[in-house]
Length: 598
Image 1 (cartoon, rainbow, N blue to C red):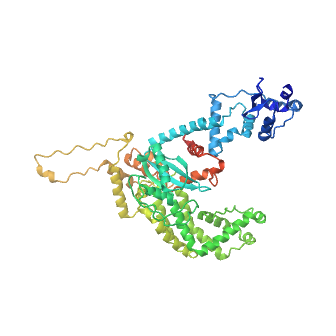
Image 2: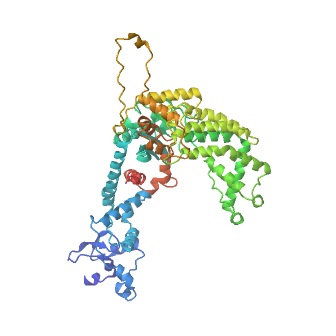
Image 3: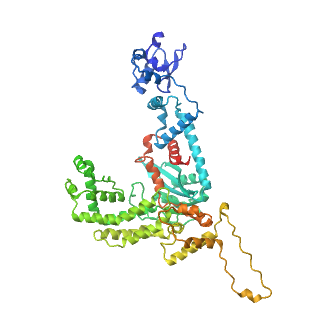
């Protein structure tokens, strides 16, 4: 027994000092405990070779003289922090943030490399077991954020949802539901749920997940609108009974081809009669551009030359050295029209002599003129897309002004891309004109103090003003904004001069009408100012309109927030690669997206 006790392998394990033939040994390099027979050490040796191959298995006595004092100090046993130690609790939260932020496998806490890393950096930290990490630390953080989210929902005037599907590999699909609300006159974006849709991606399964999410937060009565990706299955889910109480339609594109990002399919008649539903304006804008490029063979040929030049520059060492002083060319992304626009700018910024020296199809003088004209035509589309897909900024009010600005821009003649302009005008009428008649976007524009009624003709202005008066008259003012609006005492009936009753009485304007008149008559604020800051500063002057603004200005013009959620989860968004279970994936995504709530 003593000879086996002296074996080198025993120096790497804590072994109980008893007479039992079979006992448990605890590894000194990781938290693993394993059974072994005192008569054999093969399983201990295999563990060291498999998990700690970098640890030398020679006798520690032969290395003692070679060890440095610092190494000896590091191997000195350190007292571990208790679970209630503030340092341990802070480190636990940091570990949760790390795993959730990068969607790492929860098995990280069992990794021997992670154990060695913590021993080097902070040996006092008590590394949690996998079970404790999942069932205690993750759950505690999830519960904390869930409660914070419920507080936000309770205090919000209204909530707008964005819903989208993202398809992964092996027919896997993930459904994201984000919420948008105005808290203390600041836009907040939160994640309500990100679930894996198992089986067939039917409208019924999407509706089921949607209803579960709405019920979990009890937000059905606060939903101002639901903005959805223009995908067939998502649209069909909205057609199902029970999706939402009141209905008003918003039909989107009539395209049955693959979606521009390759994730979903658009359909013609799927978004009819959708209750309080808005289709993604940004996606419709992309369809307009796609239709325009399809119809202009001349433009697409020149853009193909540009793509070839960019690819050559990126792949050729000679070309890269030759053009190292030029602005960095944009990477190729064939599925996004704005990437083509950026590449065109990059290529035109290269010196003509250097560009002609490349071993690629040269750009002729006419090609350059076509590109310059193409950039001039498409720049307003790029500006609109950038603005309406902004993060935590008001975008619903920009939809109608953007459409009218695009139509006005396309009226200018084009010398080199006339077919492109004609196709863009036709597609704009087809895909975008319907948004001009959508009530939520009309009201959002009027309630934006940067715009008000400035983009409407007189007859439309009168109609929208009447609509605003009706809304304000039926709106209940919050108690903290309540002002003394008692009506003046009624005029007493004259007994002496009864004929005076036929005289016209002085019209006392109602408080809500005064509020609307004052707001509309005042000049618009500069475009670079925040409309929500205006309403915060004027909430007591306009108590009804400030609340209406919170209801309509929280609506996003696109499903970009939920798509942004998928993109921040990692390039390609394939959580199956991380071997995360559905439950752990949903929990980590919730913590990752809502970490800003605490």
